[in-house]
Image (cartoon, rainbow, N blue to C red; front, top):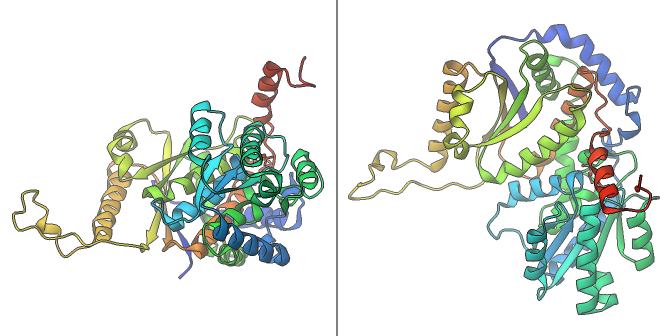
Length: 431
Ligand code: PA5
């Protein structure tokens, strides 16, 4: 079975995939041969097979060193420089103490409360730092890094701080590169031809993932398998491109404005956050494209569920449906049965969740008339996660080009930065 299968039998109106075959072939050629807009940022396409093997070996070695010597890894990064690692670690390890060293995410906000609390939490603990920034000038990341660097240097001395700090940045440019060379930090590369939101399979994602005890090569193997599957020429058998075409048709033909990525369970919530950045930043340009939203069921069925069932008709759902669980529990019997749950005895919780999924799908698609794309996904693992990353990346490239948008720039993000720098009086931004 494929790791991901795109099912289109729950759409309001069927899609004639064959009519997109030629267009998809043309765009696929553009992606693989770099003939479209943004072609300088296509390094991710073959990265799962072309990656720097020596660097991955070094990542594993350094990760072992961190695992053996520290209780915490602070990852300083924002957007594409942290979301993928967080998504993988939470999806694979969960959130309750299965990740050792503990990973703390910093540098993804400017909230004095959050930053102060992190500083207070780590001040007496053994911690290492992975600062990740391609540009090296991102304010959130740079401020956070300055704080933890100072704490380490003042507490443990310059040499101990040097050993505890790992920098992931551009090979040739940027403030973080200069600083890392000057301070002698161990360095990993974010290749110039890979944008942040397509970088989880590089050191950006792989180092924190390896520190969390997950094999980075399994992530790469998953991505390599997805790369191979995405080479399938027949659109009806190419699951990633099928997903891209379906969302494009629902946007253009059915005039939906938003896509909800639905997942079942808090451990994959961060995968949805990564997905939202990938699609939002890649496609939201020129007044176009679907608004990527997410909801976690069954939790959000008790909050957003009413709207999704019965609110404005502006969206469709894409449901991540995992075919199996890493863990499960039995529903226990209770002699008194005061809660009336004995009818579920002998079943596992996964059975109850599966029925909730089936019931919700029916309610939303049949009664609510919401189009639902269902992605059947193999049980979560490092391989599955690597596969999903590449699946969504290549589908995103296809989807953006179908929409006439350059997937690889983000001109809109710069506007808030310019205003903020001007207000802060950053040199060069006075006017
Ligand atoms: O996808 C992107 O390009 C962005 O989300 C960046 O990853 C994010 O802005 C962080 O940039 P940098 O790595 O330069 O600090």
